[in-house]
Length: 175
Image (cartoon, rainbow, N blue to C red; front, side, top):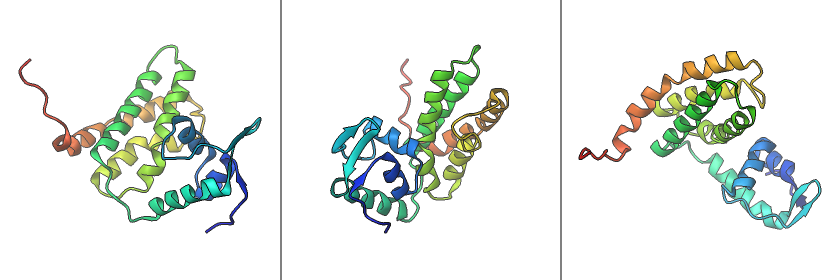
């Protein structure tokens, strides 16, 4: 266990969890992962008392340290949808950078969950699908090269759909 603090900001929470600050910021903004509401707001951002945030940090750590679980079909399909959105935005002319940035952030949110998942066939397909996100950091740099990488990895969607087909609801054939 890392050193306990009296107060935490987003950077301290990210450090305590071994995650990047952008991910923790996204969790807070989306009210996901059960992150508690901050105890206060400063001009530099939200703050939490240690007594407020440390129990949550402990739970998140326990979940991350638990044995790897298979990726759920729902999560795999979510990853597929997010990467399709990234690809679609990369194929627009001109590229709408603000929307692309948002789509990349949403897709990157899945990386820690995917990284902690079991190394089965579906997990490998989803990790491969998301692999272009790892090389770019926060800026994809050369958009043409990044576009080629994203489009090339869309081939993983076939495996993803094949492996999740049994969990998908049957389409209404009465149409």
